[in-house]
Length: 431
Ligand code: SDX
Image (tube, rainbow, N blue to C red; front, side, top):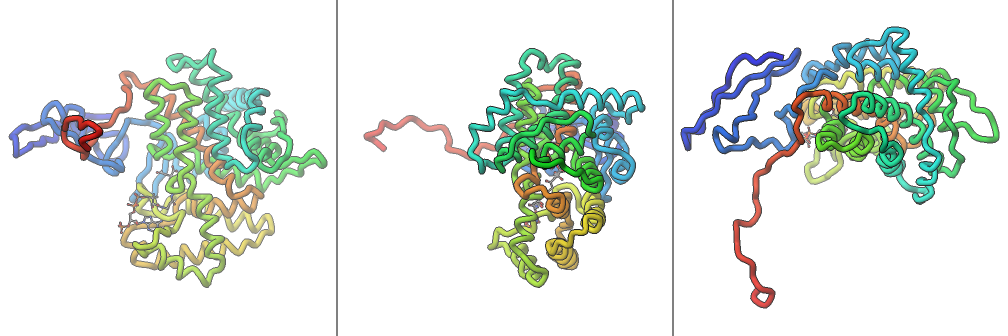
């Protein structure tokens, strides 16, 4: 990272000024370091949605929203999607380099041998009503992991941090499958060490006591690819949440649980569930025009879920890959889902409409993914849980990076105060 030019900022009302360094990274826009602005000028900056604000330096993921570029540790998402697998991608996000064969074998062995959850944790589920949303159960269960591992979660110990990463990546599928099994009243399944990561998850999800599960290579490949595509995405809302919670010194399980709850929102990871509900509400391709009209109507809070992105003002590269994959997976599974036709018509109509073109609203990662999850037999309310399984790799990579950064401070934004001016207390009989 280089510090080159200086940006001089002058407040003409007070004639106070500040000379602010311009910081440049490997790729992307330069950033004005405003660290001394308040001291120099007495002013804060104001950017409530962080649209123009870099919250940290990071070497993990790079996004160019205008060009539709996404790199994990410098590798284009298209190449990782084609040549890698989720566990290898997780290793890359955590360690910064693709693993050698030996490194990968050790990583895979470590993950495989941390997949079980504590038997007491299974009892936690009994406290939930059977129709509890799986994201609620997931967030609560992951937060409770710190109750089982308090002896080795010294956030300042690199080995403890690494062990927490292994445990979280390993246990997320086990806990996620348990959330699903509990919601349908089926017994939990123990993770099978003889299966690979995704097959192991599918087995824990769908194997029933009465008959062996026939695993589908098509389903496993599709899910592994979706996990790669969802693994990380720079300083998105849930990752920023993990970093903010992590900056207080909170343990990794509490930090990741905070990320899970942030992801749940329909403006973020919850959009994949909302897209399926939207497509089902539209129902048939002939009702697409009406949906597009509603999405443009400011008096209607209906939005095209799975469309638009804070950073991508071009196609989300992940959406392109998932769109192609949807056709392939449904074809290979012999599934003809009418919702795919609705989705394609919706995309076609929106991309021709000035409202979406002017605002550079394109399909994002959530637009097609639900159609694939549905084809794999995953219920709609589990879609965001799938996103959380994958994003755990990115979240914990950012959490570790933050703890490895010297001089990292607690995140504590300021505000513009718009409340009452100072005033004296009024006795109750005088109000
Ligand atoms: C994810 O940040 C990440 O990287 C997230 C993510 C990741 O991998 O972590 O990529 C995953 O969260 C993808 C986004 C999933 N969310 C959705 O699909 C929900 C639908 N999309 C939106 O609600 C919205 O587009 C956001 C939340 C994604 C982005 O919101 P912004 O950047 O704050 O944009 P905005 O709300 O200010 O919208 C700008 C304009 C507005 O119209 P005007 O005020 O200019 O007239 O575009 C309109 C909005 O009304 N608009 C939409 C729209 N999205 C934006 N209008 C209709 N349908 C939509 N989907």
